[in-house]
Each structure stands twice: as C-alpha cells, then as structure tokens.
Image (tube, rainbow, N blue to C red; front, side, top):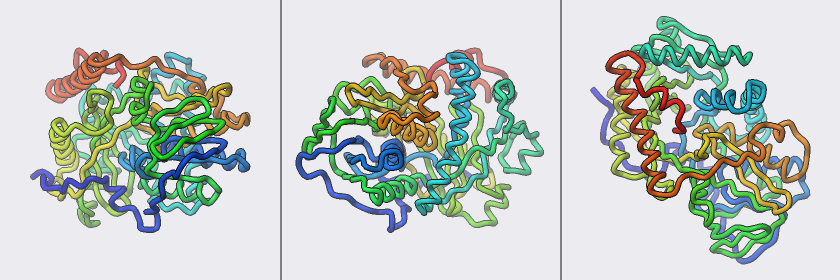
Length: 461
C-alpha cells in the first residue's frame, strides 16, 4: 500500500491552514507616503526577528515592516517545521574556508539560538507546539554510513560532542524507520509550527510599537527610500529580508536563488498507529541521501515528509513549477511508505511547496552598510527557522551600532558573488539536482559510493 494520492490541492500549507484564529490577524496596507527610522521589507522570520531585536536594543527607534502578501506568506509559513542549525552540508565548507575556530564559533552560536528562540516564545506567550526532542539522521546504505561517520569525525575534531551514533537496534528503539544501518542522534532540534512563530512574532513586535503593513509591495529600494505600490517610504535604514523572493526586486535578480522544496502531511493518526511505527516522541528524522527526505511528527499527530529534490523555476521565480511537482510528491509518498511501512496507507491531507534562499557560495550572510543605510540578510539554505533569529540579532546590532558577539561571526559583511545569468543558471541548478538524484539511485542499487558523489558534495545544492 502507498499513501493516498487524493490529497486536496489546498493553496496554503498545513501550517497556514491550521493557524489558530487568534493569530489570523489581517493588517491594512500602507496608505500614502511616510517616514520612519528603519523600514524592513518582508514580514517573514528575518524581518520580524530584526524588528523584535531593534525594539530591545533601541526601543526609541521607529520601525516599519512592509509585506507584499501577508505575514508568513513565504518560507516562514511553508517549510518543514525543523528548528535546527546542524548544517551537515555547510559545516565542512566553513571549516575549509574559514578554519576550524570560526566554523565552530558559528556552529556554537547557532546552537545557542535554540535557547534564545525558546526564551522569546515563553516571554511573548507564543504557542507554536515547540518540542525539543532532537533529530535522528539515518543511514540505510553503506555509502550513507560512511558519510554519517565522516560527519561525526569532523564534529569531534571541532570539539562538538553532542551527536551520538546509534546501531540499527538502538535506532529502531528510538524510531522504527525501516532499513536503518546506523543513525546519528543530536539533541539540537525542535519540531515547531513555524507559521505560528511568525504570526506570534508579528503581534509581539506590534505590542512593542512596530508598525506592520500587509499588501504593500516594494518596487524600488535605494539609500533612504523604498518606493512601494502604496506610497513612498523615507527611512534612515532600509533592510531587505525577502530571502527567496529577493529576485523580484529590481537589481537583485541574481543575488539569491530560490530553491523550491515540497512537503506533504497526512491526516492526524491515532496513538496506536504511531506505536505501530515505533515513533514514541517528536524527534525529527532525516535519511542520508544526497536528495534527502525528512520527517516530522506534528503536534496534532500528523506525519509530515518533505524534500527529495531541489526545484528551480527559470528566472528565479519562487513559485513552484507544476510539471516537476507531481514527480516530487510521488517520491515523497514513496519515501513515506519505504521508511515507515506501518503508515504507508495513511491518507494525505495537505501538500504544498515553499522556496528557500541560496547564495552562490552556499553561505548565509548579514550585511549592513552604515553609510548608505542599506542592509540585507539571508541565504540560509533551508535552515532559516533558527538562523533567521541569529541573523535578526546580528542585523539589529549592526543597525544600532551595539557591539554584540553575533556581529563578529564570519557572515557579517559576507557578500557572495552573484548567480550566473539565464539560461546558465537553470542549466547549472537542474544539472546538479539531476546529478544528485543519479548518485542516490546508484548507491541505492549497488550499495557503494557513486562515482560522482564527490562532485555532488562539492557543489552548491
């Protein structure tokens, strides 16, 4: 049996569809020209966290957040619900480019970010189903075992000792995922309802005096000015926090690549079904393929599965392309049945897509130019729920001139080179994705490392 193919094509993600009524605030658009100290473009995680910390570091500063659609419209309301900064693909690159000390400093800052997010959620009474049961990274073939052990070895060399390798038997005691040979457990992950975090943050910053407007699209930004379809904003600081939607701003088409990821979720399952699957808590689970799949047990007892392919639409448009979508959803259903046979017939209630941002070198960045007042942050590569908080603290400190440890991390002032022009961008991104898929098929079939696996690991995406 496979999961039901009859999931309704709802336009919203599970998170937006199940957002509590108390968080469904709709805000008016900007009405004419205005002035403010700081204007933030984008009411997602990065923009809202930046606004929040601006109110802490400089409460007298006037802040305006503008959003083209509504709060949490983008990746903040369409992701897989993992709040983590494990960065398995990024960490090795950071060691190579910046050295072990800077890489470890950034990694540690990311881990502490989970504590900070939890602190703010409690202080602002934001209920997002936060459950910090950690993550399980599962290897099911010998090549995946080798990669998992190499990741653990690198962590140990950096003095990061919080990941525990579990045997096949120990893995099945934690989660009954089929075919596991080895797994790595790390406590540094929380399962969350991400749209509730964003919606709760929006209300929190409004209570602190920040103005948030929706239905207001930025058309042009330059030092001191943001031109929108609802009026012109004059501000000392202009901060762009649009992540995967940055390409829609004139002059920014090649700065951030929107990578489309897809997710599906089942109907709520009974506790008996979860016992049959051997899933006792809400630990998040990921396999170790190059095009990996990830899983979450949601607060309302649905099984969520996402990943399995890096989608891209020509011209850096963040909306999903339907033709490839059906193939990816089919692979996600296969992953669900393959990994958790006891839940293979669980009916699917939601399926959706979202876009996350990638810089050309694969590294996130936070930039603020004090002379022009222009700043931006993003390029989280799929780990934006947590990294956006760290970026918001960094950007707020740079704007206010407050000295904080976050501003001394490698990503402060980091500018990646721009992506190639079309059609080279499309050819390259889709080529790398196809290469990763081919490597996975080879390793699944022959149980040995694919000849091109090294090229996949060295390439962005």
